[in-house]
Every structure is written in C-alpha cells, then in structure tokens.
Image 1 (cartoon, helix red, strand yellow):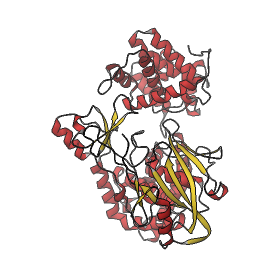
Image 2 (spheres, rainbow, N blue to C red; image 1 turned 90 degrees about the vertical axis):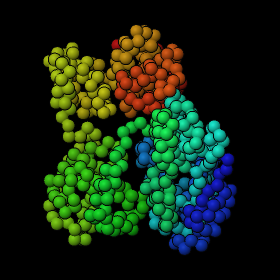
Image 3 (tube, rainbow, N blue to C red; image 1 turned 180 degrees about the vertical axis):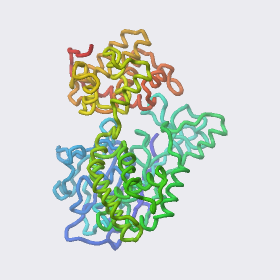
Image 4 (cartoon, helix red, strand yellow; image 1 turned 30 degrees about the horizontal axis):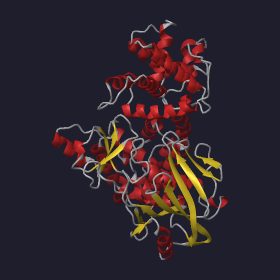
Length: 563
C-alpha cells in the first residue's frame, strides 16, 4: 500500500507544511523564533528515507555538533530503543557506531548541498539520505541539534475497504509482508501480528515501537511526549473480543504489568518528584538534552528498583541497600550500551549530591562512601553479563537434577554443551566460558577449540532436532549451511544468540525441502522447531531472512570441520 500524501509539521509554529515547502518555511520560522544566534552558522539538514520518501525530517545542527549526536537523534526519533549498529557514509568513508569513529564535528565534513547516507541495522537495514540543505545564524536553544520539521504519519489505505487504516498486520508466515486495516475490517483479515502504525520507516520492522520519551528530547521547547504517542491497541483488542477471534499483538514477549509500573512511578514522584525534576533540569543546563536523558533513564531505573523491588522509599535508602541494588539489580541489566557501566555511578553520585543539597539525604557520608567502594565491582559485574553467578555450580546442579553423572566424562560434556548453548546466549569464545570448561573438565575437550567450538555446538543442536525427522538430507544441509556461514568473511555466526541461529538453519533447510508451508500461526513443523529451540516464530523467520542473505554471499567452501 502506498500513502496518498506526504505533509509534515513545522515543530516551531506547528503549521502544516508540505515536504517541498518545508525548507523555505523553516528558514522563516527560525528567523522569528527568538532562538540564540552564534558566531558561526548552523546547518539545516534534510533527512529522507531512501526507499520511502514519505518519511522525512529537517534538523538544525550547531557547527560543533558531531555525527554521534546526529546518530543519537535518528535512533531516538526513528530507530527505537534497540541497540543495532549504525554507520554514516560520507564521500565513500564510513563512520561507524561500533568503533567510535562518529566523534567528528559536522564542520569537518563536506559543506552545503553535499549528500551523505546513514544505515541502521545491517540485518534489517533502514537506509537514509541526508543533505546539508542550507545554513542559518540561528542556534538550537538547548543542545547540539533540534528537530524543526517532521513528516506527519502517512495515511495508508485499508486493504479491504480502502478507507484510512488504523493498524497494520505483519504476516505470520512472512514478516516482510505488511497489510493495513481500519478498525472495522481488521477482524476479517487473515491471521497475523497486529500493531499500531508508527511514524517511522522502521514501522513493522523488528517489533519497532515509537519512544516518545526519547524523541521529545530533540523537539523544540513547548512539546510534550504525550503529543507524540501513536494510537493504542485497546480498541482493536475489544473488536477481536467481540468477534470471537484471537487477537495477536506484534510482540509476543511477556508484557510489563503497566498497572504495577504506574504504581511504582506514582510512588516515586509522590515522594521525590519535585527533586527529580529539579535535578534533571540542572543536568540539561549543565550537559545538554542527550546526556540528561541518559542520566534520567539511569536514575529512574535505580529508583524503580529501590521502590518497586527492594521496597525502600527514599528516606529508607542506606549503604547496604544501595550496594544490593547496584550489584544485583542495575548490574544485571541485559541491554546496557558499551559505556553504560562507565556513567551509571557518576550519574547517581550527582543525583545524591543534588538530594543532599536539597536536604533529603539523611546519611550522605555512608552513601557516597558506598558508591565509591562499589564502583569498581559494579563495573566488573556489569561487564560480565552473567553477573554474580557461579556458573560451574549452576551447571552441576542442573546436570544432577537431570540425572546426569557429573563424573562421567562422556555424558557430562554433552550435557554441558547443550546447557551452555541454551543459557542466556553464552559466548563459547569468551574467557568466562573457557574458565567454566577448564574448571569442570580441564583442557581436554578439542571440540571447544576457539575457532570451531561455537559452530560445532550449533550443528549439534541442529542434528538433535533433525534426528526427529529421520531425513539425512536435512541433516546434511544443516551441516553445509553451518560450514558455509563459518567461511563467510564477516563471521556472522560468531555474533548473537547461537540457539536462534541453529533454529534458523533448521527452519531454512526444512523450507528448502518444501516441508514448511503457510499456515495460521505457523505450520506444525515450524511450531515444533520454535518449541525445540525455545524461540519465537517471528524471531526465527527474521533470522532465516538474514541467514539467506549471508548464504548468498558465502564463498565456495569445500572444507568442513564439523564431526
């Protein structure tokens, strides 16, 4: 379905503007905005989705703004909270998020009318085209960048009646297929995963959902996060209940208890809300919106744990409680960024200082001492990812519970390989993994050699499933795929969840044999694969798409190292 029109909104005066007129309108609004001016001109940057021109932005950038600032804006406004790699390409040179090369000022890059590109998430890429369309003496009022115009959410036609759609449905069998439906027609649609229509080129990709709380930090003063929120799923849920059909939201992951979280936030804000707002205002003034947003997320996460998990209001916070919250709560966070452990305790230290000045900290000396003493251990714990757990002890207990003789050097290694593959994405190449192996069995397991251990485990899991099928062609095809992928120059199997890769390999092999067809909720064999590997169907299908792309790029490889 193709949107019928592509208007936008001037975020300074809130007028409706066309994409064509946005540049001229923006320059006029900036001149009358009352925003500060600087000795060097700011850049006006137009951002377009390369494959869907109905998504576009205009950004005002200070001359000292960096590509990393622009990357963060694009992530917060369009890309969502997932931490996929991204890269700018300027005159054939790549500036990547994975190697800190984005720390370069815009003034060091080509000037007006030069075009450069941006790619987010190589596996399911969103590709943008950026152009420095002009300059102005006007500066963003509170940070390095500010949005000044943005497309309104494109109207899509209902696939059944042709009226404007309210929701989109992602096909259960092929997540590349997205259809749009109005509320009246959606209960008559084929089965799939349902979500709201998001104002982003990531709509329908990787469970994307807009994050108004992050996007609002880049908006001009006067906007509120509630104004950016897309529709909700409750009306369509009610429609499905009335029709007697099953409703399936796009994300099948367990949902957070909204009522419980709301109660915790109400308790926090009722207790220290005024101080929190004052602290964040000071952070914005001192460090800018981006850094302040990160600090706010850190502090609010810590407060939510203290109030919601450890049941302590602010006046009850003490040194042991802070230590426990840091090491058993915050350090367990599974999705922290590379530098997350570096700024968490400094952010909390500034927060405690502010609360001490406000007269709310009763035991300041003890809390500051605890932060200082705990910081090195917190960083070490946060970086380990499996934090504070005795892995060897856990595995031995599980083996005994499963009836495995832990002294049997034939049975125990097999159990160990499968268990570690299943557990929380353990990396077999990591030093932690090697220490566990050596602690249990010494260094005698050749299958765990650095270069082949992960691939061998993936194939072993594929083979375990294929034994159910009694089809040697499927087993052999899985071996070929693992071997080919291991020879790929980018070594994709070394990254991500090994169990998910194994599921995708089996799924793809069965698909090639015509054993997986289309069915509501997935064919029986597809569901069996997902159950065996403990994966969501949509995740497996997404990974199959990625797998096929990599396989098409694999060099010819006549050597196999798999047993």
